[in-house]
Length: 377
Image (cartoon, rainbow, N blue to C red):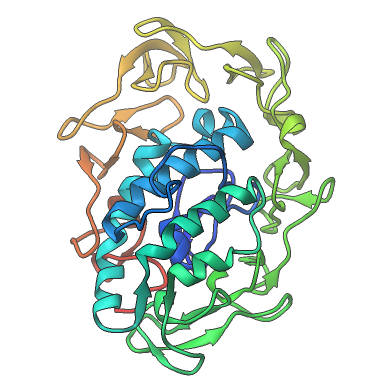
């Protein structure tokens, strides 16, 4: 379960089963996934009229389209299992936070943004529906780097084309390079072309697995677009299956563990021996440890004792409050916050100080500063 959003493949964690990658123009325009592709849907968001879209308005415009399409393609699966906060809020926050990087690159002539091309990019993404690749030409015309392969760069954004990245050892300047083919050595997925990823097991650019093929974290085997890894355990691989099969367990049926599917609809997988699917419960109700939590989004199952799986649905702590401790040793905070180990804190914007990745909106803390992946310092 490694879902991420990226600037030309340099990933920003996104809490999903699907890993995402896209070029910098798509950081503002679209998040593309390994297992699921998103954009496109009939939507009345900004850009459908053909009017130019200012750079500062693009995050909200994209969020409306991306989330509508995400729901169209995947129903409530993503929101139920993998989004820590409402989809539109998450995208808008992430991309608004990244605007400073884009403005700086544009001001220094390392990249360009054409507001008049933004509606065309939106429409192209919408027309693609659930297909992730290739990136629409209209989006390249909207936002791209100006540095050719071999040119100096400060981030992936600077490099022209959707098959390039900024090769650096995290110190500036880097050098724009072509992404690598399957089987070539790599250290990050940004270096790999198309939907390839950099396997942590082999340190090679690797093609994701197809339907019924083995998958799992032990050998870093990831599923291709539209597929989900089911049945993987420590020391044992699972297999890639369709969304319909992956989320098919019914009420009282075994779920998730030992090769079982996720629960369908609004059911939760209760931790037991064996596990089983059960209905969610209302606020302030009795609950038991489950995935996802049996309680409403703004509550969690507070265990009645440290070693108990039974508890009561309780409000998730807000900013400045002690982090919630669950019976499976998670530390929880309200939407948009993170646990610093003791208290719930607001995530820091780009350029802010940090002590770990979880404290940054971007998901990357480099040398004590929140940054976008694919950016040298």
